[in-house]
Image 1 (cartoon, helix red, strand yellow):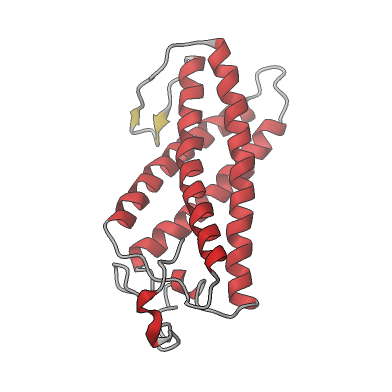
Image 2: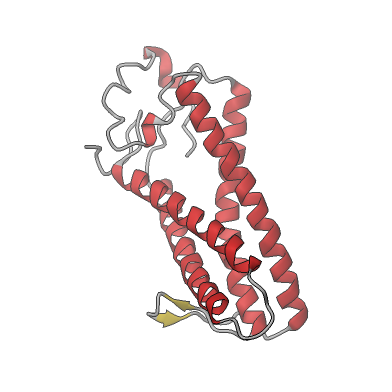
Length: 205
């Protein structure tokens, strides 16, 4: 079993849980969003309204989790990347990783602002209602709908790159990149590292 905190070679249990919970939640949000926008707007569609309410609450949960994940990441050591990863791939991993965090913050935030502009309150899991930071405005509502949609497209692209790179490292390059984000992947990670890795780069997940 992984330790709670990160080590030099492996992610800790807290980071692993946050990573995979966020991954599952983002997949649910993307699929739910794609399905609900495919439903017709004509008439009083109770199914679509219910799905929108669930989507909003899950989106706010995602915003809370990404904030928690960012705080945990800032307080922990980042495991080093495998030494054999070329410099351009290390740069690309950092860039995609930063974009992922930016999009994970931006998507629920624009959804929240969209609801504020529509004059519709957003509740957090039925516990409390979030404040409205902008006044009701039809133009802003439409603008945030468009922005939210394009951010979702961008997130799907970034997630595809992230997953594709992780699978390539695991099955093609056969390094420990993916194993570092698995609960039982710590065993053997340190043994496979080059002793000269002390100058290596931090892994990005």
